[in-house]
Image (cartoon, rainbow, N blue to C red):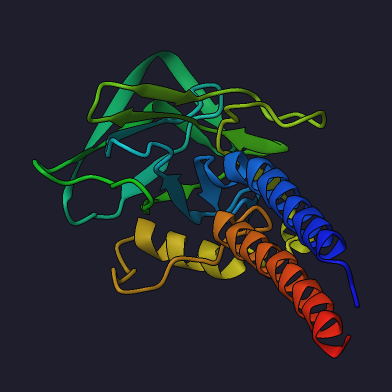
Length: 252
């Protein structure tokens, strides 16, 4: 007969292992899933892209009621068009440059430098929710990447700036949404549909019913599903061990 003290000790160890592993996984995955990101995270240089700024709500008590996305003035975009978003009002800020700026074959005297989305009264992104805000931009510059600064404002007054540069080193705590830029031949189709859609939108031919392009590898939803599956597996292991030990106890 299996001693009850050994059974209790085994169950406690299983529970502790499961709880520790679950806490570690959630702690690692939580911050990554809470970042403000741009999706897709890759597009072709010189082309157009439809971008969605994905905004998860980090707070457990306040709603996100405003988002401001700034566009780099060093490499201005000739075309920035905002897709209407029900429940939110968009304000587009343009800046006139002291001197004309050459961008590829274009010479720009002004460009959009920020877009601010403000929730209607009583609206916003509630705790546990996320939302996406879409723009059509282009032509994209001949650079390795394009970083956007995002500022997220909550209805309790908290303001979070996502403005830290993304490098090859460890990911910063508040990374700026960053779009990788590649040659068209290296795109392998990841951003081609998005480019065609965005270019059509820039000329007024796109419909507002078209679905947003899929997220890249850093999709927070995919991370969340992966974490959930791992946690479920750990809990299942605990239950299986408990059942086996209890069965042995019943046989003796």
